[in-house]
Amino acid sequence: MRHLIDPTDLTVEETERIVALAEDIIADRAKYSEACKGKKLATLFYEPSTRTRLSFTSAMLELGGQVIGFSDANSSSVSKGETVADTVRVIRCFADIIAMRHFKEGAPLVASQYAGIPVINAGDGSHAHPTQTLTDLLTIKREKGRFDHLTIGFCGDLKFGRTVHSLIKALARYEGIEVILISPEELRLPDYMLREMQSASKLAFREVRTMEEVMPELDVLYMTRVQKERFLDEEEFDRVKNSFVLDPGKLAAAREDMIVLHPLPRVNEITREVDNDPRAAYFRQVENGKFVRMALILTLLRWADENRPFERTPVFGEEYLVNEQVCPNRRCISSTEDVDQLFRRHADGTCRCAYCEAKAR
Image (tube, rainbow, N blue to C red; front, side, top):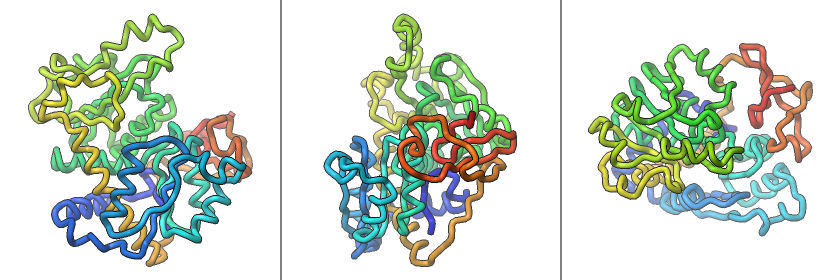
Protein backbone atom coordinates (compact mmCIF):
# COMPACT_ATOMS: atom_id res chain seq x y z
CA MET A 1 0.00 0.00 0.00
CA ARG A 2 1.37 3.40 -0.99
CA HIS A 3 1.06 6.45 1.27
CA LEU A 4 2.51 9.96 1.31
CA ILE A 5 4.05 10.63 4.71
CA ASP A 6 7.30 12.32 3.66
CA PRO A 7 8.19 14.03 0.35
CA THR A 8 10.85 11.38 -0.31
CA ASP A 9 8.20 8.64 -0.24
CA LEU A 10 7.78 9.59 -3.90
CA THR A 11 10.59 9.10 -6.38
CA VAL A 12 11.60 12.05 -8.53
CA GLU A 13 9.79 10.43 -11.46
CA GLU A 14 6.60 9.86 -9.43
CA THR A 15 6.69 13.43 -8.14
CA GLU A 16 7.02 14.81 -11.65
CA ARG A 17 4.18 12.61 -12.92
CA ILE A 18 1.89 13.94 -10.17
CA VAL A 19 2.86 17.53 -11.05
CA ALA A 20 2.25 16.79 -14.75
CA LEU A 21 -1.16 15.31 -13.90
CA ALA A 22 -2.01 18.45 -11.92
CA GLU A 23 -1.10 20.55 -14.97
CA ASP A 24 -3.38 18.39 -17.13
CA ILE A 25 -6.22 18.86 -14.63
CA ILE A 26 -5.71 22.63 -14.82
CA ALA A 27 -5.86 22.45 -18.61
CA ASP A 28 -9.06 20.34 -18.71
CA ARG A 29 -10.92 20.23 -15.40
CA ALA A 30 -14.08 18.79 -16.96
CA LYS A 31 -12.20 15.63 -17.95
CA TYR A 32 -11.68 14.79 -14.27
CA SER A 33 -15.04 15.88 -12.86
CA GLU A 34 -16.18 12.31 -12.15
CA ALA A 35 -12.79 10.62 -11.75
CA CYS A 36 -13.50 9.80 -8.08
CA LYS A 37 -17.24 9.17 -8.33
CA GLY A 38 -18.22 6.68 -5.62
CA LYS A 39 -15.02 7.31 -3.59
CA LYS A 40 -14.79 8.93 -0.15
CA LEU A 41 -11.99 10.97 1.37
CA ALA A 42 -11.76 11.13 5.18
CA THR A 43 -10.19 14.37 6.43
CA LEU A 44 -8.93 13.74 9.97
CA PHE A 45 -7.74 17.12 11.23
CA TYR A 46 -6.63 17.02 14.86
CA GLU A 47 -5.61 20.68 14.82
CA PRO A 48 -6.95 23.83 13.11
CA SER A 49 -6.44 24.35 9.39
CA THR A 50 -8.00 26.58 6.78
CA ARG A 51 -6.13 26.20 3.49
CA THR A 52 -5.08 22.55 3.74
CA ARG A 53 -8.41 21.13 4.92
CA LEU A 54 -10.51 23.17 2.49
CA SER A 55 -8.04 22.40 -0.30
CA PHE A 56 -8.43 18.64 0.24
CA THR A 57 -12.21 18.99 0.50
CA SER A 58 -12.43 21.07 -2.66
CA ALA A 59 -10.07 18.68 -4.48
CA MET A 60 -12.20 15.61 -3.74
CA LEU A 61 -15.47 17.36 -4.56
CA GLU A 62 -14.10 18.57 -7.91
CA LEU A 63 -13.14 14.96 -8.67
CA GLY A 64 -16.75 13.91 -8.09
CA GLY A 65 -16.05 12.17 -4.78
CA GLN A 66 -17.38 12.70 -1.27
CA VAL A 67 -15.75 13.92 1.95
CA ILE A 68 -16.26 12.80 5.54
CA GLY A 69 -14.22 13.40 8.68
CA PHE A 70 -13.69 15.96 11.42
CA SER A 71 -11.98 19.35 11.76
CA ASP A 72 -11.71 19.27 15.55
CA ALA A 73 -10.37 16.27 17.45
CA ASN A 74 -12.52 17.22 20.46
CA SER A 75 -15.64 16.40 18.46
CA SER A 76 -14.43 12.84 17.82
CA SER A 77 -13.66 9.78 19.94
CA VAL A 78 -10.14 11.13 20.30
CA SER A 79 -11.53 13.14 23.23
CA LYS A 80 -12.31 9.80 24.89
CA GLY A 81 -8.75 8.59 24.52
CA GLU A 82 -8.97 6.64 21.23
CA THR A 83 -5.58 6.05 19.63
CA VAL A 84 -4.60 6.99 16.11
CA ALA A 85 -4.29 3.30 15.25
CA ASP A 86 -7.84 2.52 16.39
CA THR A 87 -9.27 5.65 14.76
CA VAL A 88 -7.95 4.75 11.31
CA ARG A 89 -9.04 1.12 11.70
CA VAL A 90 -12.57 2.47 12.12
CA ILE A 91 -12.30 5.08 9.36
CA ARG A 92 -11.18 2.49 6.80
CA CYS A 93 -14.68 0.98 7.08
CA PHE A 94 -16.16 4.22 5.73
CA ALA A 95 -13.56 5.78 3.41
CA ASP A 96 -11.20 4.96 0.55
CA ILE A 97 -8.39 7.38 1.42
CA ILE A 98 -7.36 9.48 4.44
CA ALA A 99 -5.82 12.95 4.77
CA MET A 100 -4.54 13.49 8.32
CA ARG A 101 -3.23 16.55 10.11
CA HIS A 102 -2.01 15.98 13.66
CA PHE A 103 -0.24 18.01 16.32
CA LYS A 104 1.91 14.98 17.22
CA GLU A 105 4.89 14.38 14.97
CA GLY A 106 4.73 10.98 13.31
CA ALA A 107 0.99 10.41 13.76
CA PRO A 108 0.35 9.95 9.99
CA LEU A 109 3.14 7.36 9.86
CA VAL A 110 1.42 5.41 12.63
CA ALA A 111 -1.88 5.75 10.77
CA SER A 112 -0.32 4.33 7.60
CA GLN A 113 0.69 1.18 9.51
CA TYR A 114 -2.91 0.35 10.43
CA ALA A 115 -5.26 2.02 7.95
CA GLY A 116 -5.23 -0.46 5.07
CA ILE A 117 -6.09 2.45 2.75
CA PRO A 118 -3.83 5.25 1.49
CA VAL A 119 -2.86 7.85 4.09
CA ILE A 120 -1.75 11.38 3.20
CA ASN A 121 0.20 13.41 5.74
CA ALA A 122 -1.46 16.84 5.77
CA GLY A 123 1.05 18.12 8.34
CA ASP A 124 2.37 16.57 11.55
CA GLY A 125 3.58 18.99 14.20
CA SER A 126 6.72 20.80 13.04
CA HIS A 127 7.94 17.70 11.21
CA ALA A 128 6.72 17.44 7.58
CA HIS A 129 4.10 18.77 5.18
CA PRO A 130 4.54 16.82 1.93
CA THR A 131 1.42 18.07 0.13
CA GLN A 132 2.60 21.64 0.69
CA THR A 133 5.85 20.53 -0.93
CA LEU A 134 3.94 19.23 -3.96
CA THR A 135 2.09 22.55 -4.03
CA ASP A 136 5.39 24.42 -3.94
CA LEU A 137 6.87 22.26 -6.70
CA LEU A 138 3.84 22.73 -8.96
CA THR A 139 4.03 26.48 -8.38
CA ILE A 140 7.76 26.57 -9.15
CA LYS A 141 7.15 24.55 -12.32
CA ARG A 142 4.33 26.80 -13.51
CA GLU A 143 6.16 30.02 -12.64
CA LYS A 144 9.76 29.10 -13.53
CA GLY A 145 9.29 26.21 -15.96
CA ARG A 146 11.72 23.84 -14.22
CA PHE A 147 12.79 22.21 -10.95
CA ASP A 148 16.55 22.29 -11.48
CA HIS A 149 19.25 25.00 -11.67
CA LEU A 150 17.51 27.38 -9.30
CA THR A 151 18.68 29.58 -6.43
CA ILE A 152 16.10 29.51 -3.65
CA GLY A 153 16.17 31.64 -0.53
CA PHE A 154 14.32 30.39 2.53
CA CYS A 155 13.61 33.24 4.93
CA GLY A 156 12.27 33.35 8.50
CA ASP A 157 11.63 30.45 10.85
CA LEU A 158 13.77 27.67 9.42
CA LYS A 159 14.03 25.75 12.69
CA PHE A 160 10.38 24.86 13.21
CA GLY A 161 9.08 25.41 9.66
CA ARG A 162 7.90 22.00 8.41
CA THR A 163 7.23 23.40 4.95
CA VAL A 164 10.86 24.48 4.64
CA HIS A 165 12.20 21.10 5.80
CA SER A 166 10.00 19.19 3.36
CA LEU A 167 10.80 21.36 0.34
CA ILE A 168 14.55 21.23 0.94
CA LYS A 169 14.37 17.41 1.01
CA ALA A 170 12.54 17.40 -2.31
CA LEU A 171 14.88 19.90 -3.97
CA ALA A 172 17.99 18.01 -2.80
CA ARG A 173 17.32 15.46 -5.54
CA TYR A 174 17.66 17.93 -8.43
CA GLU A 175 20.77 19.22 -10.19
CA GLY A 176 21.99 22.78 -9.84
CA ILE A 177 20.02 23.76 -6.75
CA GLU A 178 21.50 26.40 -4.46
CA VAL A 179 19.72 26.97 -1.16
CA ILE A 180 20.31 30.20 0.75
CA LEU A 181 19.14 30.10 4.37
CA ILE A 182 18.08 33.52 5.71
CA SER A 183 17.20 33.51 9.40
CA PRO A 184 18.11 34.81 12.85
CA GLU A 185 20.49 32.62 14.83
CA GLU A 186 17.64 31.46 17.07
CA LEU A 187 15.65 30.09 14.13
CA ARG A 188 18.36 28.67 11.87
CA LEU A 189 17.85 25.29 10.22
CA PRO A 190 18.37 22.34 12.62
CA ASP A 191 21.90 20.96 12.73
CA TYR A 192 20.82 17.49 11.56
CA MET A 193 19.37 18.98 8.38
CA LEU A 194 22.50 21.01 7.78
CA ARG A 195 24.56 17.84 8.06
CA GLU A 196 22.27 16.00 5.66
CA MET A 197 22.48 18.88 3.20
CA GLN A 198 26.27 18.72 3.38
CA SER A 199 26.11 15.04 2.37
CA ALA A 200 23.82 15.73 -0.60
CA SER A 201 26.18 16.00 -3.55
CA LYS A 202 23.64 17.80 -5.76
CA LEU A 203 22.90 20.57 -3.26
CA ALA A 204 24.83 23.76 -2.52
CA PHE A 205 23.82 25.93 0.42
CA ARG A 206 24.91 28.75 2.66
CA GLU A 207 23.55 30.73 5.61
CA VAL A 208 23.10 34.52 5.74
CA ARG A 209 21.41 36.91 8.14
CA THR A 210 19.62 39.41 5.87
CA MET A 211 17.59 39.34 2.69
CA GLU A 212 19.32 42.36 1.22
CA GLU A 213 22.70 40.66 0.80
CA VAL A 214 21.30 37.91 -1.45
CA MET A 215 18.13 39.32 -3.02
CA PRO A 216 19.65 39.94 -6.50
CA GLU A 217 20.72 36.27 -6.73
CA LEU A 218 17.36 34.61 -6.09
CA ASP A 219 15.04 32.84 -8.50
CA VAL A 220 12.63 32.05 -5.65
CA LEU A 221 12.17 33.68 -2.25
CA TYR A 222 10.28 31.41 0.16
CA MET A 223 9.01 33.45 3.11
CA THR A 224 7.92 32.15 6.52
CA ARG A 225 6.89 33.88 9.72
CA VAL A 226 9.49 34.83 12.31
CA GLN A 227 7.70 33.89 15.52
CA LYS A 228 8.16 36.21 18.46
CA GLU A 229 7.33 33.42 20.90
CA ARG A 230 10.46 31.53 19.83
CA PHE A 231 12.73 34.20 21.33
CA LEU A 232 13.76 34.14 24.98
CA ASP A 233 14.83 37.78 24.77
CA GLU A 234 12.18 40.21 23.47
CA GLU A 235 14.85 42.86 22.85
CA GLU A 236 16.66 40.42 20.55
CA PHE A 237 13.43 39.83 18.61
CA ASP A 238 12.88 43.58 18.25
CA ARG A 239 16.45 43.91 16.95
CA VAL A 240 16.10 41.35 14.16
CA LYS A 241 12.41 41.35 13.24
CA ASN A 242 12.57 43.96 10.47
CA SER A 243 15.35 42.06 8.71
CA PHE A 244 12.81 39.41 7.84
CA VAL A 245 9.91 41.55 6.61
CA LEU A 246 9.55 41.74 2.83
CA ASP A 247 8.48 45.16 1.58
CA PRO A 248 8.67 46.95 -1.79
CA GLY A 249 12.01 48.47 -0.83
CA LYS A 250 13.69 45.08 -0.38
CA LEU A 251 11.90 43.67 -3.43
CA ALA A 252 13.30 46.47 -5.63
CA ALA A 253 16.68 44.70 -5.68
CA ALA A 254 15.20 41.39 -6.88
CA ARG A 255 15.17 40.06 -10.42
CA GLU A 256 12.14 40.86 -12.55
CA ASP A 257 11.34 37.13 -12.87
CA MET A 258 11.90 36.16 -9.22
CA ILE A 259 8.84 34.77 -7.46
CA VAL A 260 7.80 35.09 -3.82
CA LEU A 261 6.24 32.04 -2.17
CA HIS A 262 4.71 31.65 1.30
CA PRO A 263 2.84 28.63 2.75
CA LEU A 264 0.51 31.03 4.62
CA PRO A 265 -0.94 32.23 6.90
CA ARG A 266 1.18 35.36 7.02
CA VAL A 267 1.20 37.88 9.84
CA ASN A 268 3.52 40.80 9.11
CA GLU A 269 6.44 39.21 7.26
CA ILE A 270 5.15 40.37 3.84
CA THR A 271 3.64 43.84 3.69
CA ARG A 272 0.32 44.37 1.94
CA GLU A 273 1.98 46.52 -0.73
CA VAL A 274 3.88 43.48 -2.04
CA ASP A 275 0.60 41.75 -2.95
CA ASN A 276 0.25 43.93 -6.03
CA ASP A 277 3.68 42.98 -7.39
CA PRO A 278 3.42 40.35 -10.18
CA ARG A 279 6.27 38.44 -8.49
CA ALA A 280 4.02 37.75 -5.49
CA ALA A 281 2.90 34.18 -6.24
CA TYR A 282 1.61 33.07 -2.83
CA PHE A 283 -2.11 33.30 -3.65
CA ARG A 284 -1.55 31.51 -6.96
CA GLN A 285 0.32 28.97 -4.84
CA VAL A 286 -2.85 28.35 -2.77
CA GLU A 287 -4.90 27.50 -5.85
CA ASN A 288 -2.16 25.21 -7.13
CA GLY A 289 -2.52 23.28 -3.88
CA LYS A 290 -6.02 22.19 -4.84
CA PHE A 291 -4.94 20.92 -8.24
CA VAL A 292 -1.91 19.00 -6.98
CA ARG A 293 -4.00 17.38 -4.23
CA MET A 294 -6.49 16.30 -6.90
CA ALA A 295 -3.61 14.68 -8.77
CA LEU A 296 -2.27 13.04 -5.61
CA ILE A 297 -5.67 11.61 -4.60
CA LEU A 298 -6.15 10.17 -8.09
CA THR A 299 -2.66 8.68 -8.11
CA LEU A 300 -2.84 7.06 -4.66
CA LEU A 301 -6.28 5.59 -5.37
CA ARG A 302 -5.03 4.15 -8.65
CA TRP A 303 -1.99 2.66 -6.92
CA ALA A 304 -4.26 1.16 -4.26
CA ASP A 305 -6.32 -0.52 -6.99
CA GLU A 306 -3.07 -1.86 -8.44
CA ASN A 307 -1.97 -3.00 -4.97
CA ARG A 308 1.34 -1.26 -5.55
CA PRO A 309 3.80 -2.00 -2.71
CA PHE A 310 5.71 0.72 -0.88
CA GLU A 311 9.46 0.64 -1.47
CA ARG A 312 11.01 3.65 0.23
CA THR A 313 14.14 5.06 -1.42
CA PRO A 314 15.72 7.45 1.10
CA VAL A 315 17.76 10.47 0.11
CA PHE A 316 20.39 9.66 2.71
CA GLY A 317 21.68 6.14 3.46
CA GLU A 318 20.01 4.56 6.46
CA GLU A 319 18.74 1.34 8.07
CA TYR A 320 15.90 0.67 10.52
CA LEU A 321 16.16 -0.20 14.19
CA VAL A 322 13.03 -1.38 16.04
CA ASN A 323 12.54 -1.02 19.81
CA GLU A 324 16.27 -0.56 20.45
CA GLN A 325 16.05 3.15 21.31
CA VAL A 326 13.54 5.52 22.92
CA CYS A 327 12.61 8.84 21.34
CA PRO A 328 13.31 11.82 23.66
CA ASN A 329 10.88 14.16 21.86
CA ARG A 330 7.70 14.79 23.86
CA ARG A 331 5.98 16.08 20.70
CA CYS A 332 6.46 12.68 19.04
CA ILE A 333 3.51 10.30 18.72
CA SER A 334 5.68 7.60 20.30
CA SER A 335 5.68 9.56 23.58
CA THR A 336 1.92 9.23 24.09
CA GLU A 337 0.76 6.14 22.18
CA ASP A 338 1.75 2.48 22.33
CA VAL A 339 3.71 2.12 19.09
CA ASP A 340 6.92 0.45 18.05
CA GLN A 341 9.94 2.66 18.64
CA LEU A 342 11.23 3.01 15.08
CA PHE A 343 14.65 4.52 14.43
CA ARG A 344 16.71 5.00 11.30
CA ARG A 345 20.46 4.66 11.52
CA HIS A 346 21.86 7.17 9.06
CA ALA A 347 25.06 6.88 7.08
CA ASP A 348 26.82 9.24 9.50
CA GLY A 349 26.15 6.79 12.36
CA THR A 350 23.42 8.81 14.10
CA CYS A 351 20.05 7.27 14.99
CA ARG A 352 16.93 9.34 14.38
CA CYS A 353 13.32 8.59 15.22
CA ALA A 354 11.37 7.53 12.12
CA TYR A 355 8.32 9.42 13.37
CA CYS A 356 9.81 12.84 14.20
CA GLU A 357 13.54 12.70 13.29
CA ALA A 358 14.64 13.47 16.85
CA LYS A 359 18.14 12.20 17.61
CA ALA A 360 18.44 9.25 19.98
CA ARG A 361 20.22 10.06 23.23
